[in-house]
Amino acid sequence: MKQLNLKSLSIAILLLATLAVTTACNGKKNFTYEPFKTTADGLIVCNKFFQYCKEMPEDANMEDLANTTLVWISLQKEMYTLFYNDSINAATNQCYNDFSIVADSIRHRLQGRVNDGNRSLGEIVYYTTHTVKDLSEDEDYKYWTAFYGNLDMVSRLKTRKAMIDAYATLLDEYTNVHFKDENAIEQFLVKEDRCFRSLMPFFDSLTDNETTYIINETEVILGDIYKVVDAMPEEKKAKMIMGLTMRFNRRLLQNAAQCASEIESGKRLSAEGAANYRWTLLQPFVELEEYPLSLLTPAQKKQLVDDAEKLEERINATYENAEDRQAGKTIKAVGEYILLLHLNNIL
Image 1: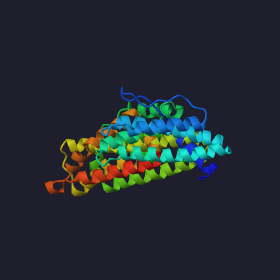
Image 2 (image 1 turned 90 degrees about the horizontal axis):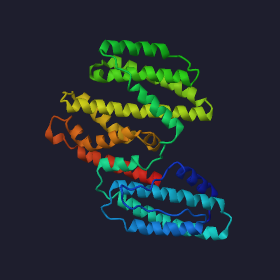
Image 3 (image 1 turned 60 degrees about the vertical axis):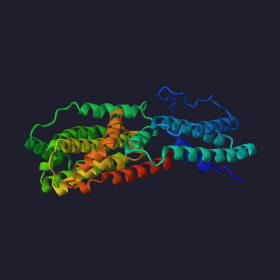
Image 4 (image 1 turned 90 degrees about the vertical axis):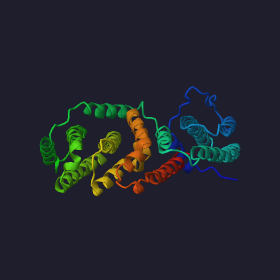
């Protein structure tokens, strides 16, 4: 008989507590259940849920599967909590064994339905972005969403010279400066964001020296910021890490959007430039892990799904020779990797 491991249950509860549940399902009937107070009653619900999963149509779409996955995440959380609170009860130990069996069956069923080998990257991105932690009611998330949303209202610098001069002033001002508090960090983020957005239309015209200077000096300043943040009290630290992670998300999607725009406008690229653009288009899909994904705004989630659906066409457009336009193979491999990793994390 399996023995209840309190440490593993504690970890499971903490992990599952980061994931939220919704039972809306695009107007279709989704699995619902009455609250339960005992593991025995919960096991009955889990068995009913397994039957529900078995009866899901073979062609269930990713929206339905995402909602069903969220229900399962909620069920697991409630069950693990009850097991943890009643771990010394011998009957609970037997119930835990029974739960482990049905839980494995549910995971296997969901994984098979979601990862059927025929999912497009757009479907996969939809599923991953809708089965991570829901932070829409988190106050820090609301703060940073508004913070970066306001930056989009700040006008860009109009000329290349104005952008280069502003960057030089910014980097000179903040290099080797000790950021005394979060307000000082936010002031830098405001100024740096305007410089970066102003740079985007001129990216292809930057010299190697200019590019190296901007990247290296910005990395030095961000390194200093992270050192300051790491020494902050936990509550402030968590808020600042969230803000910096949302900056990271923003940069990935901004870069990809700029490259996509230039490709679609028919801009001619050198071989090196084309390779850089291909990586920039792929980067959001391979670098956004669970926590960054949970911090995407609704608009960013939509952009990521839209970008996924157009990725093959855009990447293929960067190749001059028709025989080289085989991005579909790479994209399929990327999608399979993303989905497998995500399923292992959440189920």
